[in-house]
Amino acid sequence: MASRFRKWGLIAVAVAGILVAVLVGVVLAVFYFGALPLREGTMLGGGRVVAVTEGWGPVTIGSYLIALDEGDFALVDAGMDPDAGAIRSALKDRGAEPRDVRYIFITHAHGDHIGGIQSFPDAEVYAVEADARAIRESSLLTPRGLADGDVVSAAGTDVEVFALPGHTPGSAAYLACGVLFLGDSAAAAYDGSISANRLFSKDSGSTRESLAALAHRLKGRANEVQQIAFGHQGPVDGLGPLLEWAAARGPR
Ligand SMILES: [Zn+2]
Image 1: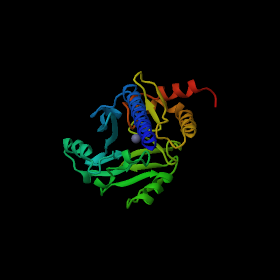
Image 2 (image 1 turned 180 degrees about the vertical axis):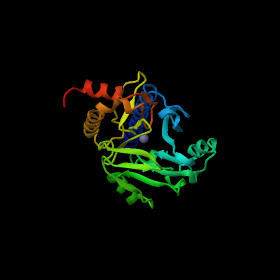
Image 3 (image 1 turned 30 degrees about the vertical axis):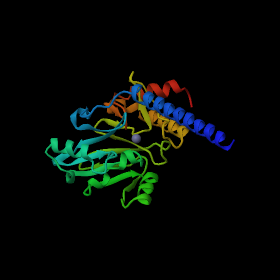
Image 4 (image 1 turned 45 degrees about the vertical axis):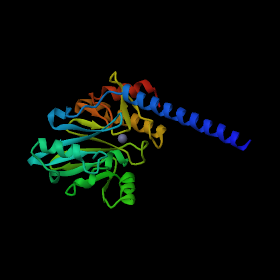
């Protein structure tokens, strides 16, 4: 009798395992095939910003290298690879080295965005305070805390900071060189539309509130945004897709 129970128990576990695997596969397929792909080497901001990518299964992880004056660079996010291989090779292609990265702006403190930080010991690292604190508490890194509305002058290039609590408590958007970097707060679909991101989000309702507030704040400055860049999908042109998402969401 006992062995019969064990047999059915094993079958139940196997079936549950298969169901979970199928579910994970479907989620990844939707994430991968429904998304606007982010391609290595995509140029943004009139040629001053380049997308650098790493693959993690079917997921593309993006970071962005910004050319500053006098051969210096800034990064928005630092990927997942602790050796930052993809970023190093993008720097090499530009005749630069890891020590030329002087600033790193983190959109949020998830492992696929902060993994490569230690490969750039000469960089000043910035994150919105709640996520800066999370990084300080979980590593030997000591990022500087930013607040909403701060403007950091990165070797003469202004980087404007917008707090977007939701995906993480200290999620940030940055506006620099005509590119609005949204990290994982939003995702771009294959048709070029964007939406608030729910995957791996701490508080999706807050993400939507934050994005709607950002759209409202930037409405009158659409001419300053050439592209919107994301953590895992391709860029979209202009501020339009964010304004359209906010308008379709209706009055708050
Ligand atoms: Zn991510």
